[in-house]
Image (cartoon, rainbow, N blue to C red):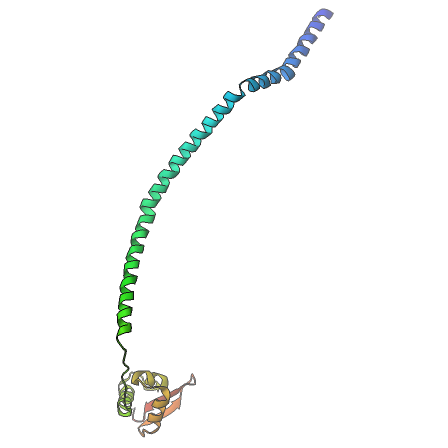
Length: 168
């Protein structure tokens, strides 16, 4: 290879490197600067198309969700509201009617206590339970049981007062 060929080859390589590294980016920048408005419009329309598709899909899903999930809940809530209104009417009616508590005399209380001690499944009954069954308070039950000779009073493992019939 002679020196002219070598210089031509080197020049060619320099020009080629210059074009490859400097010129084509400059040309690209000029192209972008020239068509900047058109490129911007193109990207905006692409964005709008994507967002329009996403928005349409969202609206579709929202409508489906509302029909399948929310509507039954609304119907159920309407039913609950109606039931609440009926209960409020019943409560208002009950408030108008006075509630009378049955007043028991000592003989009726004693009869209920003795019945519970005789017929109950358990031999021993707590004073608390006898009070509930007789409709009296615990003090009244104890007073009646202390005056009754056929009853034995005691204390349970829990520490509560208990009672049973002597013959049972």
